[in-house]
Image 1: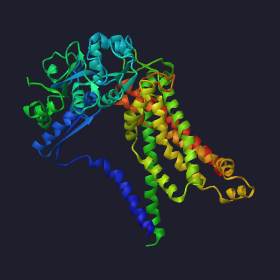
Image 2: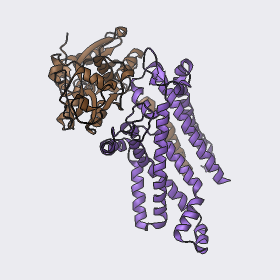
Image 3: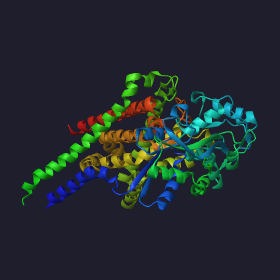
Image 4: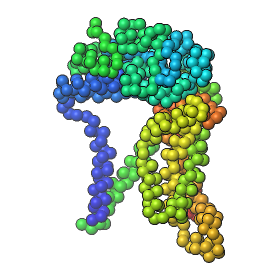
Length: 276
Length: 286
């Protein structure tokens, strides 16, 4: 009897091995796979949920992994849509791009840091190690803790483009992954300076997290200064497809760019783009 | 139906499961080697320790120097074991020889609970509680020290539970003969019982080392991740695992391949540890 139980258990175990990979496929529902930028992903997931509600039988699967992965997966056909949180480069015209929103990157400091405004050259000097103490720019007598993002992150790329540096010039004390980690790190350290998406920073500020968003070259980073283009560190969030989109893929992209998604985009502190 | 006639089928299924597990492991190793081939062929594994810096994504002059990360990994792991081993040993001795039955069950329960906490929770606790405290002593707070303390906490349950079990399995006559010789209780514990369990203590520390070596999420959150060889406990370090987790999602081509090569290096280190454990255990048996 005992052996019998053992046999059944082993058979179940074996079946699990064999059958699991097959579970991912659904026979009678269409699936759109969206992968890429972790900046766009939370928004895309919300839009996907609304889209699924409006289109029963369609499943939109949103996965993160960075803009580079979004491009690679789209090129390899692993995903129908890639999310790329920057403008497409000249060597990237093999894919079709659709801008869905604009995001600004802003510098953040701890709430107890008295410095209210920074200039581009100050930010540049802080990140390259030319300025090492807050007192050099009128702050406290404390060394600056420079928080930067890991190689390959698109927020890093946008920031580097703004300060005009190469990633090898950056002299960081702390290297972080996503926006949330950046905010937690800066909020926990009164001497820190970091940069994250304006959307993420504003949302953290609204929750009462101990950070401050200093103005840059006299412009206060916010949703409205991104909309009018006066905030200097901004980037366009794109969806990309390998070929002209058709069917459900096309419907999803159209939905993303329609009025219906504007409220969701605003809720994520991004700025919506008018369809061309 | 007799059990005998069942046996060939059951045996076949069981063997297939065992074989499946081994095959998966072999496939994983093959996959990691396969993904590393690009950097191994174009740059060579030795560039991981001969290059001065780590800029694998640079388009003009990619470099793959992983020495600061290897050093960071070893320091964080060794530090965690150095902190956790004495604590774990004392805790196991207390539970075994000094605690009342109720207290013993309570402590064991807490330790098992500690083992079940997900590593990301340890990391978040470290980042929001431990790091600000360290930052008050010396900035930036996210540091080798934070990593060592969080890792020590994480491997403590492994150490306590294994040593506790080893002490419990000591033959009763050992303690009895020592007592018959008129030794005091602390003498019996520290000069007879603990030394006679030293191999199991060794195995426990090696297993804990392997766990600390592979830990990713918690160290990613609390270590700061700057790629510099640490010169003090308060310096920011990046471990190999944290590096893979930070950069893999965004890495392409040679960069991606270099990350797999550093994974291969980790796999080698863990392999050595497992071999060490095997060696210790074989000695116990003979």
